[in-house]
Amino acid sequence: MKSLQTMVAACCISLVAVSGSALAEDSTKPIVIPIHNWSSQIVMAHVIGGMFESMGSNVEYVPADTQAVYESIRNGDVTISHEVWQSTFGKSFYNAMAKGGVIDAGTHEATTLEEMGVPTWVIEKDLCPGLPNWEALKEEACYKNFTTADSDGKGRWLEGPQSWHGDMMPIRLKALGLDEHWTVKFAGGADALWTELASAKKEERGTVVFNWTPNFTDAEGFTFIEFPEYTAGCRKEDGGDGGCGSPKGWLKKAANYKFPKTHPAAYTAFSKTSFTTKQVGEMAALVDTDKMDHKDAAKKWLADNETTWKAWTK
Ligand code: TMO
Image (cartoon, rainbow, N blue to C red; front, top):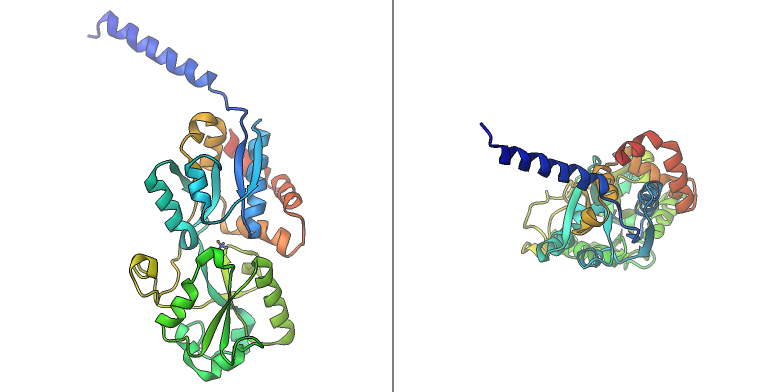
């Protein structure tokens, strides 16, 4: 039988616990959300910011480098990241976590792929017989259809901005023995990739570009090239020769370790936040297909999907 003392103690501890949680209120200090350089990320920043504001939080948006942001989250200059793509940012995310100060705030339902590929009509027109198998790229019947004015007679890969993956693609071309017939050019920004897709289609010429899913291109038909399978140590920075494709990966959320304590309600909602492939694709399409401004796109998305996100705030 419990002693009176134990029972009194148990009663008081539970009272403290109840009143403690009832009194926990989110700080009025702004939640700092980073803005990067692709559309779904910017729209989702404002979607999540809008959700936080609906709960009474203050929000601030800051432009941030896509790799250095994890160090900024670690030291508290930035509060969250809502699109941590495994292939491109997994290493920076875990490096910052290992130094202390970054927490894994959960995984979106959407799975991801970030890879070189072609618009599906390029395959239908047979501009590179054998695609999506990467070995098709070795053949002249293929690479001759992908030359451009600045590619020195080689087929051209249009990679994303160099700030995303450094020299990963030039290293891959070399490791796979493709560099004799292919070369990499870096796009200045994501918009240059979409401009290239549009002009290649108009001119009916072959094009290989870096792309990802979920994205607005999911709806239009885009085929990712199938490279030798990704394994844990295959990349140069992980000790390999780099002759591998990208992982079929996750899409995570990150937060500064103090966020759950300073903003418990907002953190709880952020932890529950999980977007599907379709939802992330829609956020990109509102800007890249429908040509809306990012903030207006987020307002529209929030208005059209109240039942989805309001459930996370309760
Ligand atoms: C990080 N990204 C979605 C552009 O590949």
